[in-house]
Length: 282
Image (cartoon, rainbow, N blue to C red; front, side):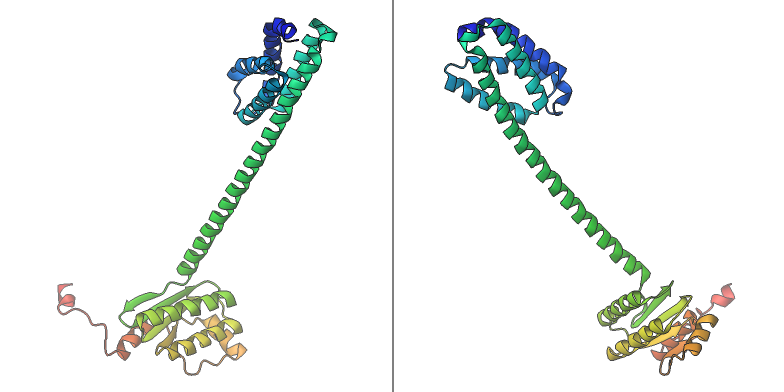
């Protein structure tokens, strides 16, 4: 039988190479076309590994190697068909060459399928891991962005030792009000501030919930030994406060930030004075 196949070896290599070339687009990118001649020689050469058991072992090893290298199953099936067709036409049916070659290619195909499945599973696991890593990184970035936005939306500015200014801009809902209270209390505790000026000039509207949060913030600040001064109340906000009956008794309110800073400095025994001789120099 080996003698029969041996005489067909050059033709088999050509047939297998031609079949693999015609199906090269079915291979993965890791199996480039220039490797096809070598693969064809290996496929045909494996049938001459010695005994039937040796040929089967060689077929399994080759199938695993080809699967790991990226050869596709369709290409290998076409190569098998081309080889068996040539053997069936040229060999004596009684020689058993067709059955032998069929078993040999069957072992190659079986091992390739196993290797291909393992490779696909590995790729799936890697893709899943990469996806989870990407999602995790995106969540971390989103959390950092949210944190940065919270800090930017609630800037707490130390204007003098013991004096903090909290300018608020935009609408203040319950969630943001809670964040404002938390950050402000942390800043008071860290700096041991005596006076906190909350400037709501940039707040277009205050509802009952927001006003209650401001009052709660004032009480919490007083427990830390800090006095809250509310400045920048506009006409519409003032009308809203009166209309909904919010009680601001005990809360210092001033017209603007300048008045608030002057009040805070006065409470601390300080004031803003022009430099001596500055007016004359001007």
